[in-house]
Amino acid sequence: MRIAIAGSGQLSVHIARPLLESRHEVVAMLQDGRANRGFNRRLFVFLSRLTGGGTPLSLAMKRGIPVLWIDKMSEKELAPLRELAPDLLIVAGFGIILKKPLLDLPKVGCINAHTSLLPKHRGPNPFTAAILADEAETGVTFHVMDEDIDTGAILEQVAFPIGPKDTALTVYRNAARACEEHIVELVDRIESEGLQGTPQDTALASYDKKLNEEQVRIDWAKPAVEIDRLVRACLPSQRARFQHGGNTVYILQVSLEDAPVEAAPGTVVKAAPIPVIATGKGSVKVVRAYTKRPVPWIWPAPWGRPRPGERLA
Image (cartoon, rainbow, N blue to C red; front, side, top):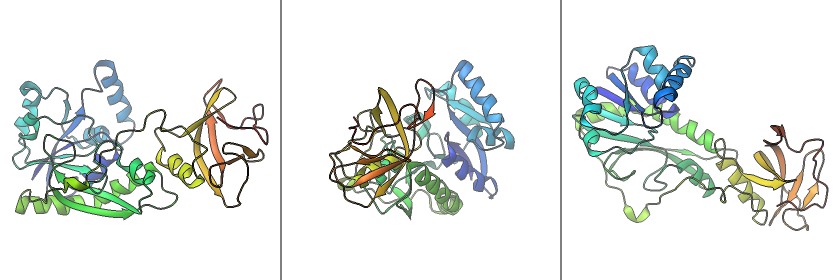
């Protein structure tokens, strides 16, 4: 089949690579023209050339695949894709919601690779949401696309476990590997059977937005295990945070302390060599953290170390 791929991250790269080695033909790579205009696009293209095939754009340039920039999805904008006559469009981490003119363009249809076990965790934040919900597993769902978000009939699901050290980034990487392992077989089946999917159970559906500023701030009154989950769920893009000495401290890693503490939540139980903070249940050791001001530096810095007994915001 003739396949177009729309995506800006590693998910689409992991889908494109096995398809490029299959009997199917990747005829176009669709990129977000809304986020990349003018100088930004030229810079984006320049930087992509340096990655050697590590991004969808650089992979397309390396393999001679036409790159099409999608924004308004007007007939003029879609004309080059129409000339390439794709049978199937595969969406994987695309920043634009597809409109009907594009959804109707491929001969067979459009499918999406969504990084959760739908109908749970629709929307842009599925891996973060799965960690915060303390779920034992998540996965990838390949589904037929319609004009709503992540609502189409399910074609295939691949599950994998969420470990106690997993972050949003490692869950995303596991999802990308699952896509790479299953995409060719799925496309083969679509070629022979068409888009035969199972409707989603809307009663089980949930939708997860990206966390806001308030949601990524540490609430020391919560149990240590919940704080640990928030830290892992926020990596690498948002990062859980708290205030100390007038600065925002961004946390990269904590570990749980088993010994019970009687101090109030937010109290610095131990300051050196690694700070230990009391929570609503248990305590956490702040293994890796940093501040951005006055210059980017590890926290705690020698000149701003918290004192035992101090209460953190």
